[in-house]
Length: 101
Image (cartoon, rainbow, N blue to C red; front, side, top):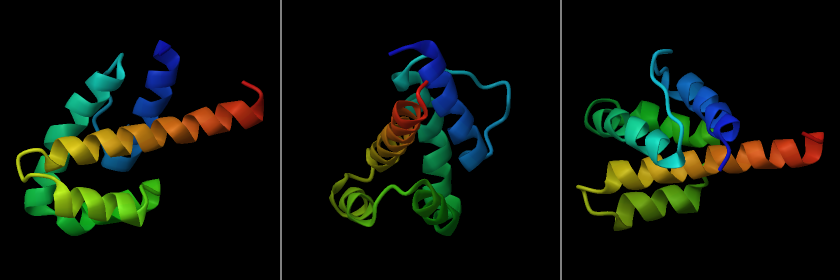
């Protein structure tokens, strides 16, 4: 996966999750690792805001329900982070495909 693809995904995630500018990632796994503790904190303290972000990112109601109902409590933040990163990457891939980049 090329690095500017990851950086474009990072920019979307920074906006959605209000991540500070100094945080960086160079791989999909870095993005998930960066997002996981933020999501865990939101699960514990601001679940409604997390749901709003999932809606805004267009995660998909079925995918969100599946993660919320089937994931173990210990892995829920990781599963949500992975799904959100993959969704944002798909959006970038589609945008690039149809914009000629």
